[in-house]
Length: 403
Image (cartoon, rainbow, N blue to C red; front, side, top):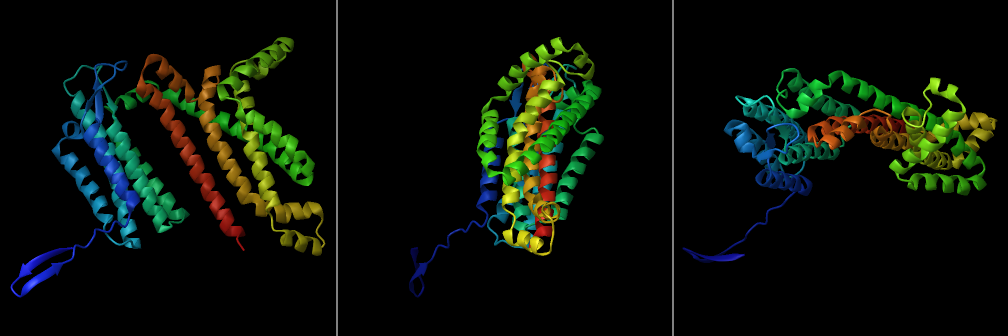
């Protein structure tokens, strides 16, 4: 509070404090500004094996693109001072989505400008400021959708819109000058095969783990005395490091192949797909069994008693009452297992299982960051897609079976 003199005597001026209505968004904007100020938006290197020098966003993209990103950033900052409303959250989601696509387009545009007149071996990689800006825009969009309490349809439309926008940029050649795109172009067919192999490893391991873990969980519910030994063994398996487990399986499987050579005709061996699937199944059993037990024990006892009162047999009660009511929890466990398997399948490339991990370890061996990203980014997107799909199905089931 301050006191000022006026024509009629001293008067009191009250300073009104600034009210921040969205602290999360404000923090994201601050982090983005700091990253742009202190790190490069892209990096330019003489070849793919040498680290590039950082180039700030204003030097890489030009004044017009930088101004567009700045305007959208200022708009997001201004919304932090406005009282929340559905219209405001919708506006934030749209602005954040536009910022995300503009940042991606700016990176491609910057790469196109930097390679003009340069040697063919020059590589333009994505810098820290790009990743932070893109992450902050994506998080701002997600925060706005969460505050809107957006339903499944709205979330699907938002994700599809971003994916189509990114695909459109790629189809029009906007991203072709980036070294990541060049690494993909050189390995297009190998990349497609690696994605298929990765999805196959995850799909087979999750299916086998479900076929083993679900009956094991049901047995543990029907016979509670089994729970301690079952969870004891599964907890021990879960604590073994993935690389150690992959390596441990090589010896017994190699001995088995030596004893029964015919198994080699079916792909069984000490290295390759077989030990990878076995390890992924062993890691997936604990979440499957645990969520099966939690889901079945959490079924309302009154619903079970009502089924018994109607003359239903135990099998009919299980199929018609317990299993449908426990399905959302079971699907939540499947979501955990799938995301976990996608990540662990990357490590399985160390034992010759193939998949996206091949690019990761090949890039690490060559000190080629973009080659590492060629394997890591699709694995991340697969995990996010699987999590989104299964989380959506879980929400729909919970809504369907809600009382």
